[in-house]
Amino acid sequence: MEKKARKKNPGDKAHAGNKRGGKKKESYSGGVEEVEQVDQDGEGEGADQATATNPTSPTSPTSPTSVSNSAEARLVPRGAGRGRGRVCPYLRTINRNLLDFDFEKLCSISMSNLHVYACLVCGMYFQGIGKGTYAYTHALEKNHYVFINLESCKTCCLPENYEIEDASLNDIKYFLKPMYTVEQVEYICRNSILGKSLDGADFFPGFVGLNNLKHTDYCNVIIQLVCSIIPLRNFFLVFETKKYMAKNIISSLSELIKKIYNPRNFKGVVSPHEFLQTVGIESKKNFKIGSKNDPLDFFLWLISKIHS
Image (tube, rainbow, N blue to C red; front, side, top):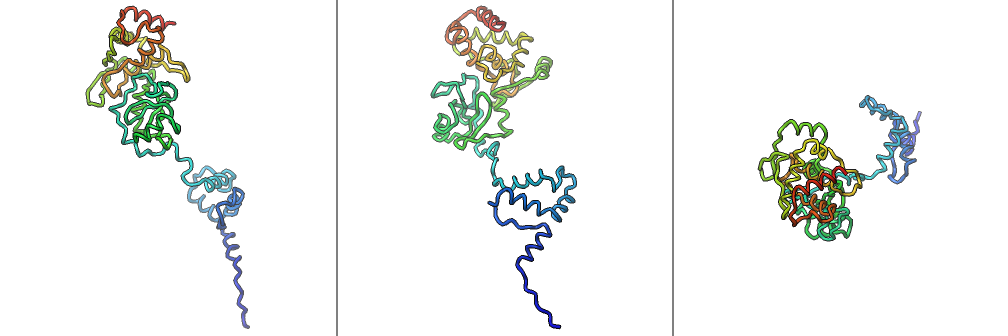
């Protein structure tokens, strides 16, 4: 008998593919419903193979969680959500020798203390990071792209304005705001620690020099005296400034003593400039930079402020 040739139907191939769980996705813009339908139709041989390959997978291939996660993964464009913490190509431009966080944290142009950032290339302070701000303009004019917030220690790259998360910046963050635990303070009390500055000089944390800012030697003597009173020193080392707390004599002195005992300091000296600026405001200019005073008067005033 003569056999009739059966005409091939184009839908047969697609039907066979459906049985194998390999339904082809026609377009990307089909919506979440289409993707979920494709995943549900695709459960079969391919899903069984995935389960056999990874038997320790916490979610089953047929669970709704797996389907929704797969749908989200297909609908999210590539590269989305990677702006935070991405690698910055300008980290090599940072100059640690020019960084000095001992001064009052004010914008070098507007003299404002709000949202102040330090340029990690030249060390200057600027306000804001948004478009049109002083830091943004400085980045475009000087090609200095890496900045750090002087309060939150967050680093960012301008003018793209994305946050930088890199382990190589941890020493700068600790240099800006050193923190101590109770265990670390106890270790400092019982052991001698040797630090090394950027120029290679050795120093002992706690036994560093204080810059004389013009007739401020009487203040430096009292600061060293406070550091020698162990319970008082330990109190300031573990003192934590509350968020949005206004700068006062306690928080300013605590930051200064933490810098004096910082074993990872970039230099072997510390400047009490920011602390003395706070002293001038709190004392109504009775103790200010440029005027001579009696060390005992300053000590009695400081102790009364601490107790109050």
